Image (cartoon, rainbow, N blue to C red; front, side, top):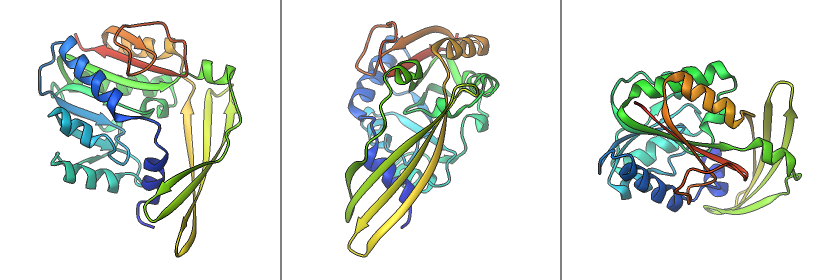
Length: 248
């Protein structure tokens, strides 16, 4: 099945676009970025947020390094009337003074597996932003997740022409600071069952690790939020960390 990985991702995606929409709209006003900023969305996945950016009236350039997600992202950009999606991720950002906002929604920063990789990525983001521009991203809060850990259970979701069952198991390596998700999906359609698997490594970076890398790259006005419904910077108490930083 074409774009099987993308179809499974979209069926089980946990990020609802409406809170992100409201947060970004608020942020653009709060940081005085302007009504129609040009946006770089790094790790755009299968392009699930293109309709949201279109609804905001913003122009977004999506970047996606995963070859299994990129075709769907390319199609989504075309459908939304946006510039073509680009292959690549943080380390392929080469622009200077180009974007009002850079986003990395639903964990792209977590796939930067070392502090050196994060510093390089954040430095590239800083250069790509215009002065006063904002960088917004979210990651799992692994301190909370490991404290409240539960063994994953199978999940079922509707998929075009059938249903999908997703099972995850986790490999946790505290010494290496890695939390690896192994996904196995079974797609049931009239013609039969199709199986799919994917290995997804995450860096168990702490809030202090992320803060250090952002400040070392040159960002200022760092703020943390427990989710996209928040509007006040706050201490992190739950399973997610949303961070926002600004180019001076």
